[in-house]
Length: 91
Image: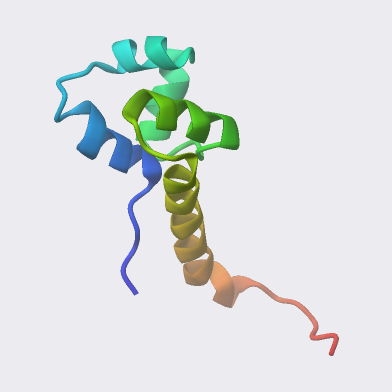
C-alpha cells in the first residue's frame, strides 16, 4: 500500500507553488496564523473541518476533498502502526 500525501503537501504542491503564492499570502487569505499554516504544510497539523472549508473557498475545491485527503493519510498511518495495538477481542 502506498502512503498518501499529507493534505499539507497537496496544498503546497498543487496550489501554493504553482500559483507562486507565499505562505504569508495564503495564511492572510485564510485568516490563520502563518506558523499554523506552515505546520499544516509540513504535516505537523491535521486539516480540521474549519480549515477544509476555508481551503475549499480559497482554492475552489470542496471541503470533502480536504477531509478525504486527511482521512486517507490518517488511515494509511494507522495501518502502519496497527501491529503495535494490543487489545483483547470482545466478540
